[in-house]
Image 1 (spheres, rainbow, N blue to C red):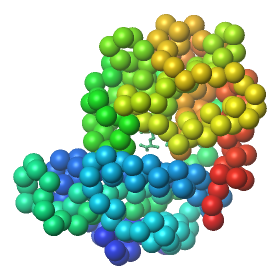
Image 2 (image 1 turned 90 degrees about the horizontal axis):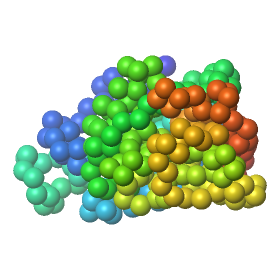
Image 3 (image 1 turned 120 degrees about the vertical axis):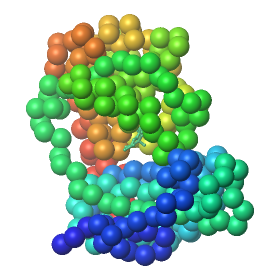
Length: 287
Ligand code: PDD
C-alpha cells in the first residue's frame, strides 16, 4: 500500500503531495512543526505536543489552521491509512502562500501538511553500548524555544556528527555550556548521581520527552537539577544520554574523544529509558 499524506484539507498519495512554490515555509522557513511518537498504534504525549504546536504558532503569530479535534482526527486517520504501529506523525504549519515579500501577508490562510512514517526499533546493542556525540559551537538564533522549520544549523551539525561517525552533535554556547543536541535534549549524570539537563529558556527547545523524563525522575526519587553544564563537566560525567520523541532515552558513551563512565550505558540512563518506555505504553498514550 502506498504512503498517504495530508495537505491542506486532503489526503493524497505521498508521491503526489505538493505545496505551492510560494509557500512561505519554502521561501522563508516561516513555519513550525511537531513530531509525535506512535508506539504500538497509539500517540505518545499527544496533548503536550499539540500544546507546544499552539505555543510555537502563537509566538510567530500564525493562526491555527484547524481546530484541535479536527487535527487529532487527521492524525489518527493518517496513522490508520499508513498502517503505522511504531513510527511518528510529522505536522508542519506555515504562514501560507503569498507573493514573496518579507512582511506578513494579509488574508492568507496558514498551510498545513501531515505525514506519517514507520521507524525501526533501536537495536539492543545501541542501547547497551551507547552512542557517540561530538561538540560543536551553537550558531543558532536566540529563540530556540520555538519549534520552527528553520533548521539549517541543526542540519549542518547533524551532518558533521555523521561525518565524524557520531549519532548527535551537542551544541555549545559562548560560555562553554552545552545547550542541546541538533534534534535531541542533552543530559548528564554527575559522579554524585545527580541528573542534570539544561534549564528550559530561549536557548533550547523544551522537549516533551525531556518533560516526561523529569516527571519520571521525580516520581522515582532521583536527584535532579535543571541547569547549564559545561563541556568539561560532561566529559567528567558518570553517564550521559539524549532524549527526543524518536530516540526516547539513548545512552551516550563517548563525547568527542572521551569515553563516558565505563563505555557502557549507565544505570540511571537504562532505568530512565525503561521508565519512559513503560510510560509510553501506558499513561503517556492516547488512542
Ligand atoms: N526533534 N531539541 C531539538 C532541537 C529538537 O529538534 C528536538 C526534537 C528535541 C526533543 O524534543 P521532543 O522530546 O519534544 O521530541 C530537542 C524532533 C524529534 C525532530 O526534529 O525530528
